[in-house]
Each structure stands twice: as C-alpha cells, then as structure tokens.
Length: 240
Image 1 (spheres, rainbow, N blue to C red):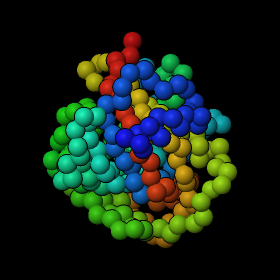
Image 2 (cartoon, rainbow, N blue to C red; image 1 turned 90 degrees about the vertical axis):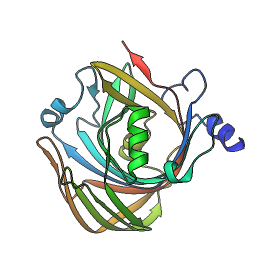
Image 3 (cartoon, rainbow, N blue to C red; image 1 turned 180 degrees about the vertical axis):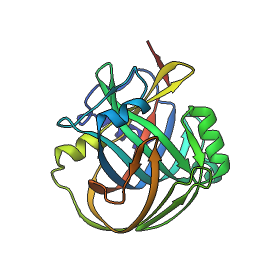
Image 4 (tube, helix red, strand yellow; image 1 turned 60 degrees about the horizontal axis):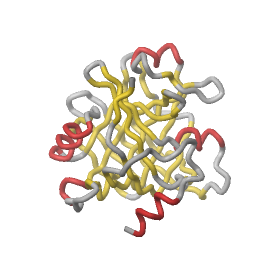
C-alpha cells in the first residue's frame, strides 16, 4: 500500500482537490503514445453531450488518439487477474469541462481482449469495443473489423521534457472523465502523479479513424510519449 499512499500524497499538480471518499479502482496506464489533432469547434460540437462545454487551448479544440497498455486493474479490495486486467487499448478522446472541472470525454475506446472489453464496458458504461491490437516497444498496431478503424504506427523516442510546454500539460493533466448514459451525465474522478512526458517522432503511420464527419489524418499536430502513470479512480457520480 506504500505506492497508494505516495500517489494520494502527491497533489500539488492537480487543478482541483482530490475527490471525497475512498478510491474504488487501481490501474496502470503504461507505455502511452499520444497523438493530438486540432479540430474545428463546429465539427466537434455534435459529438459531445450538450451539458458538457468543449474545452479549448488558446481558442483551439483538440482530439487525441492515445495508445497504451492497461495493467494491474483491480477493485480496491481484490487482486488483479492478469488475463482480464492487462490489455492493450486505443482510445479517441476530446477535452471538456463541467462545473469548472476539466476532464476528457471518450469518443471511442478499443481494447485487445474480448473478456476485458465486455467487463470494462459493463462495469464502467464507457464505449469499449473489441479490436485486434499488437505492440512492441516502439510500434503499435490496431484494427477493428466492425468499424474499419486501423492504426499502424512506428515511432522514435526523444528526451524527457524538463519543463513541459503548457499545451502538453493541458492535454494530459486531466483528473476526471465524463460519460453520458440514459440521458444522464456522469463523472469519474481519478488521480495519479503528474505525467512524465518524452518527445516522440513518428517514423511511419497508417491511420483510418473517423468520428462522424471528423477524420483523423496521418499528420498529427503534436506527438509525445510517457512510460505511464499509476491511477486511482472513484465511483461514478451523477451530475445534476
């Protein structure tokens, strides 16, 4: 439990206070590759719940593809079960705010394992789908036969950011996620230590991801990488 106490005691980087009550899930988001695109507000607005405000950085909206490996996910009082709790994931997210809490909203989530996908979708309500995903240290391959989405990427890593640019912080230091279900809006609060980011450059990429009329291109506006974070999450809260 030492690492849990260390996570909970590291709060100076948070934009708002820790949530009340006990955390409910532990998980690790490891070896994360981030690709970010600017997108016009008018194109993005129809795909985000009306009760959420689309967050902007210097007037610009963003969509991101985040490819990583989920590890050691478990409820508070139970151990992780490897064949369920460890899987590769690709999610498409955008940036929103509600009640002055900046967070993320997932436009799609794809996971490697069928059972993990089913359990994650059932427990969280998030839009998980099964996809074929493989990765190595500096490659990521994802394909979804149902949607036609695919992402094949190789990349190189650079040096660690000592002073992260403000945009990098804005895109990564998000401590809640929002979910719409049954005409209701929910928030999951999370906490982790500050992301440690590295420079990354794309060597090759083949990409086909669309969100309605928004198509992500093979030339993202920004790329970076992190070895990962250890994450605590709280039960979802219905918002009025």
